[in-house]
Image (cartoon, rainbow, N blue to C red; front, side, top):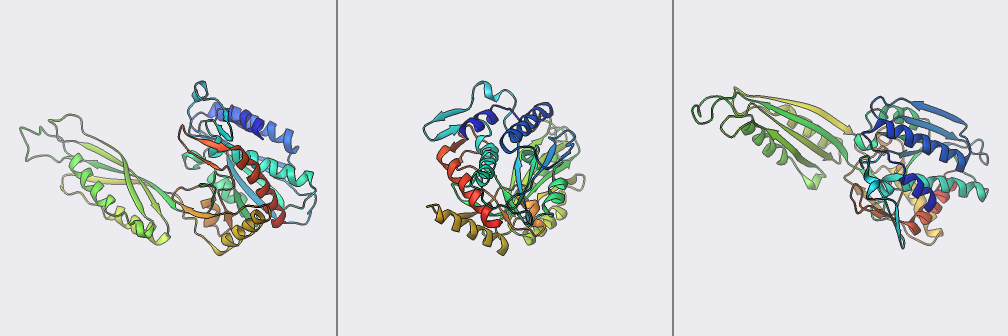
Length: 367
């Protein structure tokens, strides 16, 4: 497993480099063929400027009449080309580090070895459909329709994204990405202070209104993360923009935020406000079906000598799409470790073994 992860991490797959994504996916498919044999069916979907999505079917020979389970993994990472030059895969005791190891290359390695474990021990398992996409880190714009098309043909969805301090993820927030643009009227700020309209003034008022909408008790956070505006200190700004990240725990809160954006009006009648963007991923609620699947996983863990925790997180994944379609989704089945999107990213090697065994046991129970 460590050798596989070392080789996988050594394939650079940044979300914004289509050529490297093509090479990376080619490596992944050849590796999957070597480890699991050729899939019974393969479907590939062109991602355009984004990474392609491939769907691979691995039917069960032990349970030919069994149900299908869809597993979700992405092969793209946030790390730019050239990162390996000064940060190669490294092992220090139980810690494995390398770009994309935690998010989420170790998860796919664990899934592969879980399937190999079921095969070696002649354990029953459901038919497994693997969806691999190369645009998750940019919001899955090209792969979303593929994911939604594939998951509805299964009874459950397992997401091999990294765990949260070892806990599985049974709920995730919905995510919105919005952009507010203010257009003003440029004048000389010193000669004509009473004239014109400042786009910076307008966008500042927008920021205050948006941040005031944060309600952590209801699971809602609104963050203006990027501001741009103006040209010179002595010119009233003609244009300013705010890029906004929104996280919500309920559809009701999403509607409240939608109403807030729709209600934005300029303070100065000479100015204009324009809102673009929208909801990137729907809310993944903690449904009763997901809870039952977590309880099953916890029973498997107990039989293997450890205990599982569950958690609700603010980050989203492709599991949100499946949950919005009413399917039971168990997320966070990937690596035990920490440091997603950071140079401190690391994976527990013993955790890889533990979670591969957990996934194999869970698949057996799902059969």
